[in-house]
Length: 223
Image 1 (cartoon, rainbow, N blue to C red):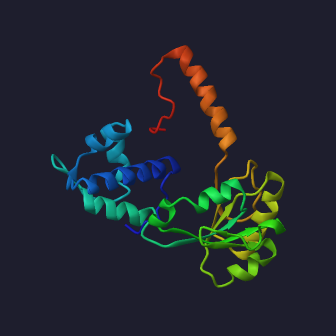
Image 2 (image 1 turned 60 degrees about the horizontal axis):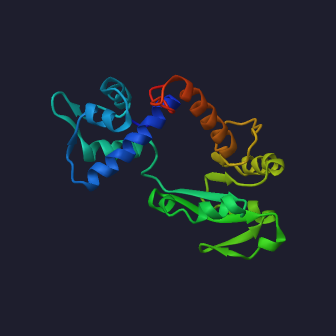
Image 3 (image 1 turned 30 degrees about the vertical axis):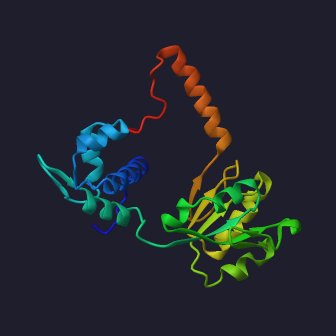
């Protein structure tokens, strides 16, 4: 398995959740786990888990289960978690500062190596050991830096311009916190995080669920 196969996004999301649970199992010194046990942790059927794990390779044994350490290692490889991912953060406002303070990023091999902002008042500020630089220094700083990911945490009106500059530089992926859709003409991968939309959808689903069943599941991982 080379990890480059076309894994559907819903499956990739569940693989990330499996990996998270495997970390917990490893910390508890568990050596084997069954698809039924993994499914029970996440509210999925064992058939769904087995189907998803076919992308990982043949590490399961009928009647025995999966070797936790081997499954963990292969999921990390397929999801790119065995690599170091350097990222540039554009936007040193509230969201940007929160991201810089999020310790699990470094533990997961995601390293924000540089921070940029258009506000002169923020230039030179040291935020969690990173010095905020003028946005005008973006391309010069990123040149030969090994940065492959860009994080956009700027106001909506500025997001497209920032994205265009990241694409021009040659970034591979963008994590977009701005509440707008980015129009990109390349194959750059974009992952959008829209807090407002998420809350609206959560409120809508809770309202709908309250009319149907008090135990209605909000997020269906099987889709």
